[in-house]
Length: 93
Ligand SMILES: [Zn+2]
Image (cartoon, rainbow, N blue to C red; front, top):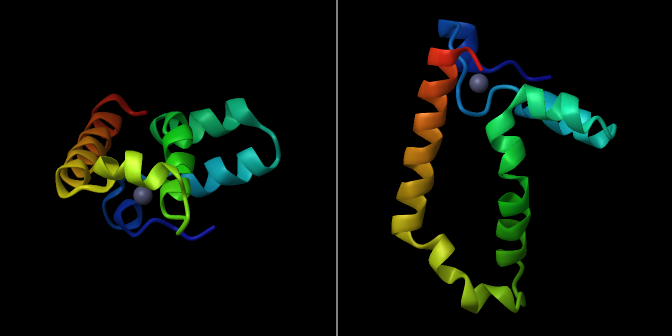
């Protein structure tokens, strides 16, 4: 596993801390363990798969859901990730 530079430097968890262990647990079928490593990213898995579908060149969903890739949407995702990073460090998640 690649260590997180932010966690290594500051001891704080970034929004993505635990994601490598989460993916590893998912690949082994350990869903509960995966959830505990990064509950926020785990709950976003359906959306992550949706985004992967949107990036397929001939995806029929692309035209209907292109607002999910807009600049405003990207700003929203950035703010949500930052809030998750703050909340998880406050509450020790
Ligand atoms: Zn991290």
